[in-house]
Image 1 (cartoon, helix red, strand yellow):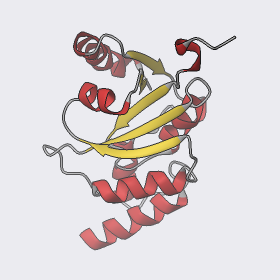
Image 2: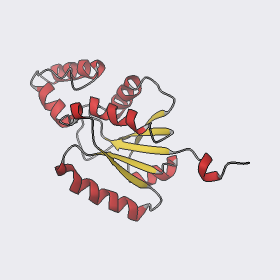
Image 3: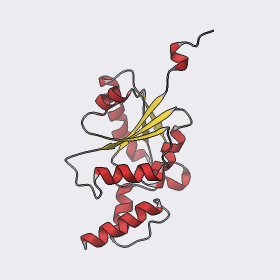
Image 4: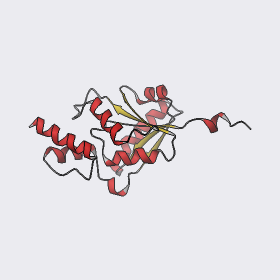
Length: 170
């Protein structure tokens, strides 16, 4: 018996964000996404209206090194509409993390707009693990800016890069 096209299709999930920098919370969601997707594309947003701490190339390198070059995880940069990138890479699922109720309204509006623009892509909201719920890239940057300990929040590679970057900026 030949498998149906639907049964044999690869499930591709897209996890997009700025990842400036990637945190243990991001790592957790990437790994957990692999429990229901065959492949995860971590899409690093190149948002020209923001002033990121790390360049897109640095963020791509951090994610690739931290995720251990797992063949099921692809790390790519994108700009423009997420739905256009999703079409380009064949993603059927858009993964979004929700840390708190305050995240929900914005994420819900984005999910509805993405559904309007690309009805065949589903958005899946994931809650972080209990020990990473409070972690955000912006909080990590703020703590690191003032010399605080971020070792439990990010991979050692990112911790070292944060210390170096803020020393350069002083």
